[in-house]
Structure formats: C-alpha cells, structure tokens
Image 1: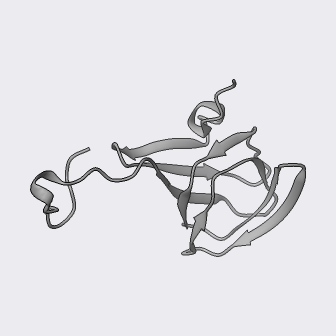
Image 2: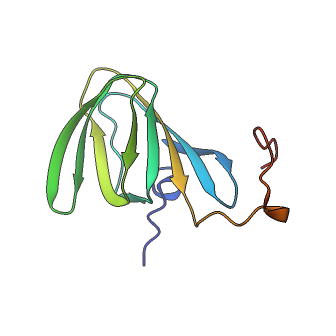
Length: 117
C-alpha cells in the first residue's frame, strides 16, 4: 500500500508543527497554480489563515471550494488531491485526530495547556 501521508507525498507544502499521542497538527502553504498529489487526511479540524480557492479531486469527483480566512470546520477522513485555482496563497492549519484519549492519571485532568510534546 502506498503511503498517503501528506507530509510524505507533498512534503514541500505540508509540515508537522506539533504532534503527540492524540493529535498531529499540520501547516499547509501553497501559491497560486500549485498542486498536491493524492494524499489522505484522517478526521481533522481545519483552520484557514487566508482566503483561497481550490479544486479538490477524489473518489471520482471534483469540487471547487472558496474558503474565507478564519474559517474553522470539520474535515471528515478522505483521500484527495488539490490545486490552488485562485490568485492568493493557501495557508491552512489541520488538527488531525488520532485514537481516543487515555484516562488521565488519577482520573483528574490537569488544568491549562500541556507545554510538553
């Protein structure tokens, strides 16, 4: 089976900015006219940093999308490729979900953000 991890298939456009046992956070950045090869995303939360237009292709279908900066949305697990069809850069953060959370030690979660990795 081929590796469809976007960091592997399109490492010039995707980079890991944080990862632990529960999530992986990716930053995606491209310029007008750039394309991705086929890759897969698990269930994720997407946060758009710029306005952009993209053409997504996968599962025998094609869809053009326009996203406004500051949009937060659910991205169900999927395999696709994409092309920046607009005149602005695409800049997005993906929070990819992993397995369910383990029980915290003693059953009481810590307060505040975890500063570890």
